[in-house]
Length: 249
Image (cartoon, rainbow, N blue to C red; front, side):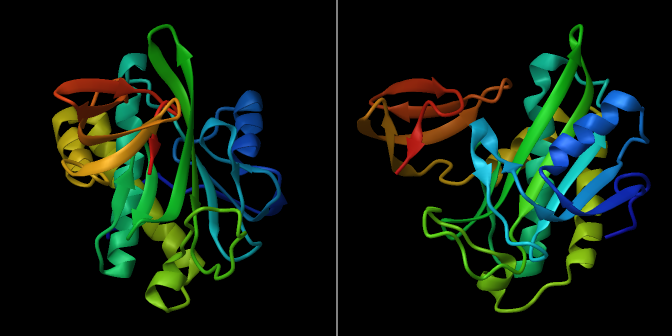
């Protein structure tokens, strides 16, 4: 990978913080930092995931990062394409390191063999009909080997590869991949991002078991709407689901 031009060029490395996304948000409220500014923390005491989930991480073992971007070119109704771009960047990084197939579990968890390597939390600020700023929170399990037993299916790059990883190198590579896909987004290459996302989507075009409102059903993921809803075909009908409206079994 080539060295990124602006993503990660300014790097604020903290020993400990409640959440890198919170820190980035507070930073943005006081100043306009350069686009691509990266905030990392060796320890995160109150990391957040999607839909108010907590992100648990062992101090010094994993990558907890937040990037500040200004995707003012992106209309609010297309903000899921930013999620696609970030997911593709993290997926490609993990696949390069593991030299094995890595998938995106809708909307933006990163999976290897049914186990979760990374989670992404994007917080957008909208002005009128356009995005004005985005905080891209990424939690990637790198060297952690012991996980909270309450977590359903965690894995780390080390637990999969059997090799300890260099956190600094991984951070630099992530910045490169993120810039690569962000520049595709900035060029409005929506078809490219959509196709790449679908090709790498976990359980895409496969019959699998899901649950909605306590009811189990068999279905096949056939796509994602431009707003980011998951489309599952079941019983000859197409169903669209938002976040937390359907559960993978």
